[in-house]
Image (cartoon, rainbow, N blue to C red; front, side):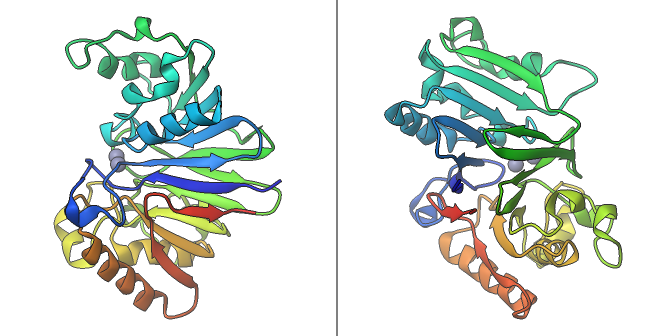
Length: 282
Ligand SMILES: [Zn+2]
Ligand SMILES: [Zn+2]
């Protein structure tokens, strides 16, 4: 079974369209795990999910699972403009981290009702169900999935997706440096168990090192911490993700060059995530 990843949005915090973000894209987090059958697995529902939704309609995919790392708006705000919602033959399962206060449905529907949105969720024709993410790994459509809490404000998880031949860790919003990365085993690093030995890691690299000092505790990583994290957990390939909205295409290429200097040839050269990028997972 061949599995691909397709990046539909990799911008952090807020969408950033414009002439200087054309190459890497301005849409916020959304990644599709592309399977051979007609079921879609989607990681996060940032503004990138709008174009994915149109593509799923075109492909006739009517069974869809969306896995949310957390409910910050940059990971959720595309859901209201997700075309499959408006098809009564669609079955949509939305999975997210549990909260001790409100159900996932109640938290999401705050953003899906007046005055924040003109329609009420009751008007949606698709069959939609909300689920707390399982605490233990589970299997779906021939892949194994794991969700685990990671360091970021509010209940936030990262995901590990494993196929028969390869593994992916998706950690778009993550600040493992807060608890420490160096000189500890992978299972004592935030997100370490999710990313241990992974073939591909999509990891938060929102800041240059010189910017990070003013942003400690905001929940995001510097480029050198993203590289250090992958080295510490023995991951093979780092894809730098959750780009700072202010970061132009040319500035992202400088960030990529910085990451490559830091790896010093010991890992596969890190790459900057780009909207439309397809990664073969095997
Ligand atoms: Zn985010
Ligand atoms: Zn966040």
